[in-house]
Amino acid sequence: MGLTPVEIVEALLHAAGYCGFPRAINVTRVAKEICAERDLPPVDSTQ
Image (cartoon, rainbow, N blue to C red; front, side):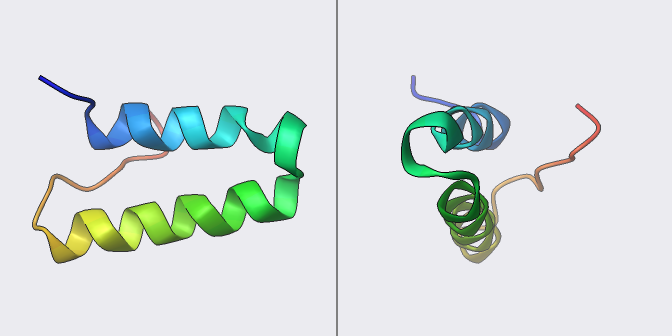
């Protein structure tokens, strides 16, 4: 259960309309770093 790394990044990018694009990009970068630290599959921007 839960979300895939791709789904997490997509949800965070959808937040851009509410929190602003620069913050959404920053939180997306942090989420990708956390996924990398936990050896989760990399998030491919072409998916």
